[in-house]
Image (cartoon, rainbow over all chains, first blue to last red; front, side, top):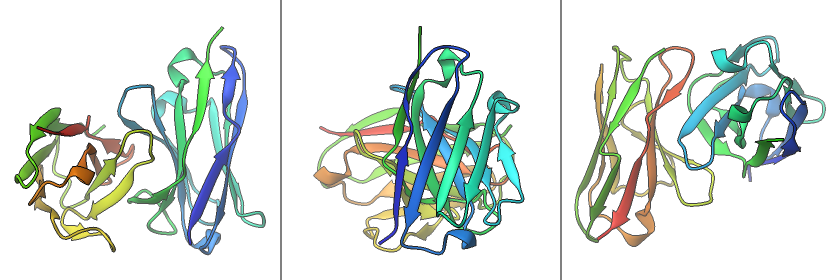
Length: 121
Length: 107
């Protein structure tokens, strides 16, 4: 069974940092790109970032470029999202999701359960 | 960025009704269009990929069609367990973008 389990969310001050993790099991991690997708409270879905299966290629939405860094440790079957210079508008549930291909940016199946990040003073 | 416009934003229908949701892209995206279902408090679930391909295990009452800029998602016979918000998503260009969602309720 494919499983994705996120952790690392919490309350952080504006300007602060947080690192999210997503541990996966049930599939060959290196064979698939991975993405982070977020959802602000009561709002729709927003793709944040993606990384190819080997980790060589990364992609970001403009609003997080230069502040967020996606990475993966294929030896640990773990995906990360390092979030720096956090803003109130980054408040959201962050989901990790398995992409359909090794290069990424296709469709997402499945998704993790999500971890809530709240940026507030 | 490619804008995805979904309509309606919400709808109410009776059990057994046929439900149709549309998604319009701001430019031609061929068939690079997916549909997800999100139940309250849960993660989204993939239903349809490449505009019309049903994901394994998804009931056949769900279907999708379209290409270019105009797409349709249909539930042929609405069931109580279909209460959810449905999203379209394009992957023709980065950034990947989602429609605003359609909340489906039972009348």
